[in-house]
Length: 122
Image (cartoon, rainbow, N blue to C red; front, side, top):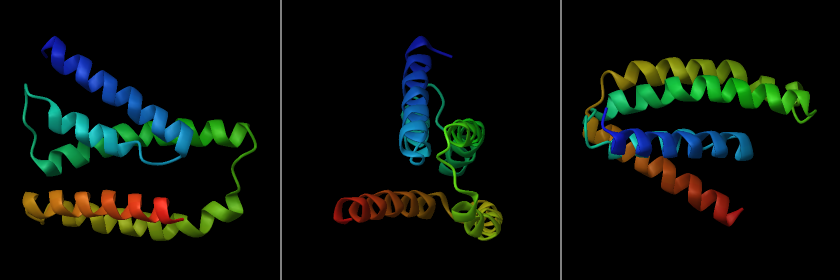
C-alpha cells in the first residue's frame, strides 16, 4: 500500500473513531469516504460498505463499553432497537449483494443528506 493511501485511510480511521466515540454514530461515513478516496485500489461500492461495516463493529463495541462504564448507557432505551436492527441488518446485507452499485451510492448519499437535515432542524 502506498504511503499516501495509508495516511488517507489512517486519517479517516481516526475520524471514524472520533465520530463514533464522541457522537455515538456517524463513524461509518468517514470510513466510506476514506475507502472511496483511496487511489491505489478502487473498490466497488458494495465492497466499500461491507468493509466500512467491518471497521465499525469493533469501534461500536468499544464505544458501547466506554459508555456503559461511564454510566451513559440505558439498556431499557437501547433494547427496543436491537431485534429490529438485527432484522434490518440482515435484510440490508442481502440487498447489498443484489442492488446495483449506482443505486447503493445514491442510497448512501440520500441517507447522509437526510440525516444531516434532520439533525440541523432538530
